[in-house]
Image 1 (cartoon, rainbow, N blue to C red):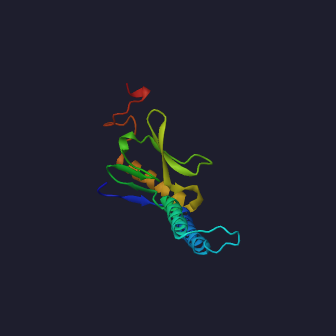
Image 2: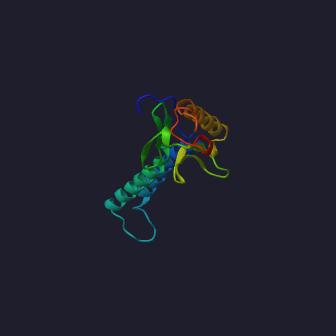
Image 3: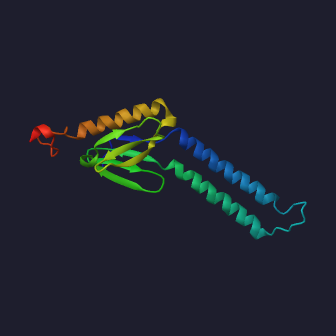
Length: 160
């Protein structure tokens, strides 16, 4: 996406993810350091300690995946980056931007009853989520032609 008019990221999930990653690394580092000294008589080697540290780093990396979500919108469309992937959707394919009751995050409604979760706008963020969803809807309204309007490729029953 070349020019982003709107960009949003989750707030609460980012803070929790970073704190969890730091905590995981710290806990696994302490466990790895204390692993040699056990009263059970089990002998742990250096390789076991290294494996514990690597496991902590791996779990911290998984926790940091929740820092990735982002949504960007501009004239070309909307780019949604979730945990593992990024999708660019042109505005022509976005039927509406919704936030269903009880849903953890917003979504883009697409043709054929499909949708894309927008994990960057999360209900846990409260008023920030409301502001972000309104801003995303405003960008969509600015860059799309209403259905059935002159110049629109969408037909309504009365426009035939």
